[in-house]
Image: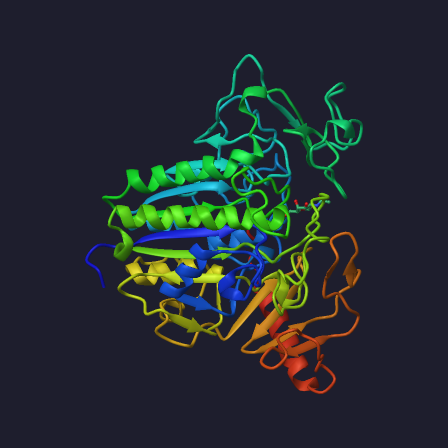
Length: 488
Ligand code: NG6
Ligand code: CA
């Protein structure tokens, strides 16, 4: 153990799949910095996000609460209210209590304000009301308006004489502003489904906005903008323990890398933005090294949910994918109840403390809260992180025992149960295949039971052969869902 409390950095990709990095088997996307990180730390082969989409996954990461306990934890619009009540226990507020400086940079997507936001005033509550001292964020996603950054509580670079208006009402209330639907001639990147509303930077988005011309982001500069903020936060806080949540926007759509990275892979923009993200990771690692913080910093890298190729723009991700399998050997992807939805790259480095290696211990992002509280000896309030399990020895690579069970969410609040190597997917209504994104959901009228050891691709449904286990896991899942305490 080092003397001081270790800094904790969580780097969190957006829609990066289990098979997208070199250290997880990808051969057509060079990710030298992440591969390096993997070789210096623990590489988890069964590390899970809590959900197959962003908002619920991030909600659980920051609160240690299963996402279905909060009825608002589903993919949010860009003007949705904050879904984590100010003052409630969160990972950053727990770390703050332990004396940490806390910061977030990048994709937020957990809502802001209380509804009816005025983007031209102070925007509150937000990250700074749930435990972060420092915040520089994109409000929702890079395909949703408003396409501006929020620096603290205010839109960054806003000219008060050009106020911003935002709406998610169906009909465009701003006649005269260009939209993807009416002005395809203005588009640099065309939509394939959805994404036909306001045009910003030559890309049509979800939602309508007008005004704020000087504050609008340029997608190609986003990586560097976030990186500069990230490096400043680390540098400014180098003399005290800090927690830094660095939430990348890559490789979520629309994928527009900086010109330096365009064409770096043969896979088109999706591959290129992953290379760009890997470069950002490298710059963070260099910064830590330069500041002499390697041994004092726990560096985690993971992804909020599994991969998708066509998520609404025609960027050739499907056509150019070749042999690349973004989910690796896993079935399904983003939005899916199969493992491709939630099993993600998961790396942890703590130089000098954690021995490099690989583990198949079952761990989830939801467990950071209880595990780091235990590491730091912070007493937890009874209502804090009810679904977070202290798996610290597994996270530090000291034990092969992680969780014994884990429930995860596909899209639309559909929950499944992992127990050891077994996965149980109850019968759910709905399409088994999402045509537009080309992903299997896991919906079926029959129960599904898979044994991942030997069947990582979830091909052999063993439900009929193991009726007792199906019954047992089904009632356990009901128990977990029933223990749902109503949370705001
Ligand atoms: C979907 C969007 C998709 C993406 C997703 C959220 C359409 C047709 N699809 O509704 O493009 O934005 O929401 O992704 O609009 S997530 O990673 O933030 O969960
Ligand atoms: Ca995501």
